Image (cartoon, rainbow, N blue to C red; front, top):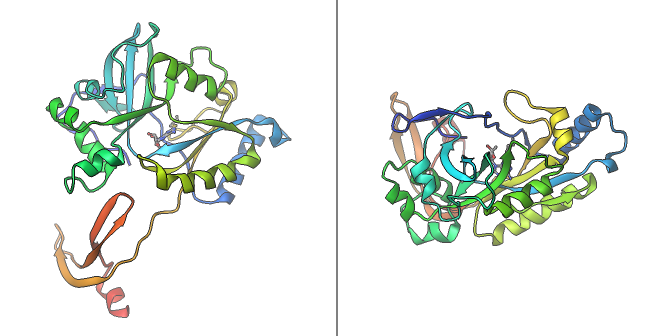
Length: 292
Ligand code: IVH
């Protein structure tokens, strides 16, 4: 979920809309996606399709505009058409160069995130690294953003600069001086193994990921397939199962909502889940609570 533009920041239209990704929650969803690609491109043998596979970074998306190689504008996603001008905040990220190694005019897109190790340095200040990144980018005083030591991974450059594949795109991003999201090329039958590898690898990373992004690698085929109003047809996010944990209920209290609804809330023995320490949880409704 992106965050809605607030009144605090100037709103600026994106040169090219920032789309979302279609989600897959199962192997079947991925098989459907592969079938659709085959049909769309009229390819019989899925061996002929080359994919790129990369982790889905659980952060906040941002678009960086460079004119003749100079960083000129940083925008949040906003509603995808209009973003918020967060140029001073973006400029504090030390991984984002103010000048590219080549004097290109382009938009580079990627994910702003807080490393788990940085998040831990802040103790109890934030709920999870993603919230920390979102809150830090929304600081009007960019000196606060700077002190939060945010990181960045780029995954997209527009226009495509005559590139043929996703791999070349990531190479260009790195050559220009930005950190690129780790990517690899794969045939269809390899995707499941790669997914499982990242599910395991997730535990050892210093950043949070919530899925595997699979993209048709050829830029030409991407153009042929195009996009819906919401997402490109040539890409899919294969989401990881939600992280779970178990704990003990210490006590149950009541929470009164803005509209007067009363919800039971459990106070729990603290349990770490997905980078956050969970101490409280709503308990659905009274009927369900009584049943249990
Ligand atoms: S590609 C037009 N690759 O996930 C292509 N997105 O749920 C769109 N995201 O808004 C994005 N890691 O901010 C792409 N490796 C990755 C990504 C990635 C994280 C975010 C992105 C997008 C959201 C969709």
